[in-house]
Image 1: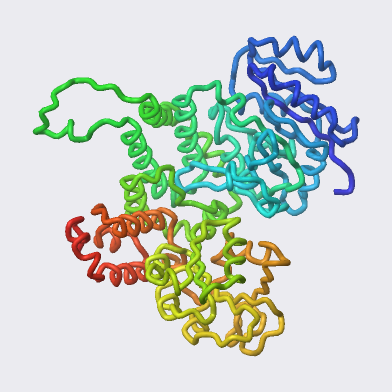
Image 2 (image 1 turned 120 degrees about the horizontal axis):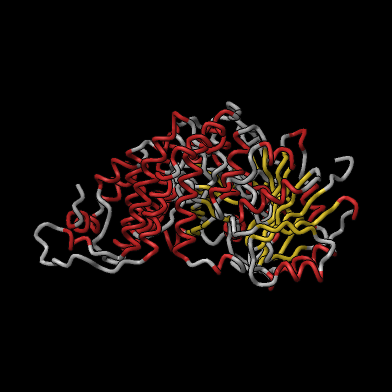
Length: 578
């Protein structure tokens, strides 16, 4: 941008006196023209002396006082309406910012290209762990932060990357756009209002991205910890449903809302710890009452709240859909982890897999980042170990050296949505035939012979040198040439692999049906549970019947082969498998 926009930093605060000094003192040190910056604190009916603190020690701060606690979303809206600037930057009161924070956010603005909203990087108070450097969304409306509370590493921060939403604790947005879209939905009170706003921005034709140089430090749940867990549970569960109902198009709403409600009830039943056997007709337990946790009841109240708000919610939906400029497919492609699990309990995982199959969600969410990667070396390969380490920065990686771990390759291939294999691996045929997702073949220096099966089936070929012989020439989607990516782990870091891991569907060399281009994350987890159980001698294995219902055909064929193994037959029959 040729000139810096004026910015109002809006800080919603509720009983935040203990945090405000750190926050405001850091803003006093921000490197930004004084005549282009104002700070607004919206006090949400505090009773801890916050207003007196602001009036006596921070007279340069504009105070907007609310008589009662209207929640994070409504307070932000009040601050934005009070502002007179070009842009609004929202900041949690339990944060402190680096001097470059605001300039970093502003650098990400590019209205001409659609980028009217920018998210900052959030670290913990010491700067040692990640709070937010990107986010993901599930098909049932929940969301999360990538690499949450992992140790901070610069390679995890990709400046300028598209985001499905910017975290409301540190974000900048064009004020006119924000107000025109209705701001944050005040009915959310708190939690997921930023996810909903990001979704609405993309639907309306705008874009959201990350400003990697805009850094702030957060006392995690410094304010939110004052709200009991069961109340936070109600807000997140209810708001996730609000987000789905408002933003998903007419043709897809039923397909995602029904399984979302089923999974909500499953979570409620699980958290209640109520014994299902007590409800059997012939049960000897005749007690009329039992004690259950409020967290489970919170989920039922969440669904009830949606029903109570339904007429107003549908009005808000009509307004969102009226502004639609992008179809659902474009939005779903931003989610990253549409089948991420809120519980790894085996019964919950099976419920997710069954619902995904029953409602055909694979056809809606065909684009997901690589969440489970298998690296198959040819002996002790230092290069592939480094590739595995680099890939492991962004995703979960299993490294297999056939001389030592060859017996598990077939099982790991079945549960991995991206396989990276040495060009001369002894397991080339198994990998070529059974890899369902993306197959990446490592050529190393390009001089070793490539197994013909991998040459035929591989989607992407890695090399450490640009000097490769035909047909191994660098191109994408050629008829007789192979797509080459030069990766020198020691020098280039993760950047050459980042696009492959984050958008593997763009690198398909062979056309395949939408249901056969990735292994959904819920199925990956179920396959892992299955593999770990039978190897430990457990008996709770998934049945082939479930495999037939809920897996892509190529995965099913691979699993049928596994089920024929002698050591699996007894376990399969005891668990009801075919």
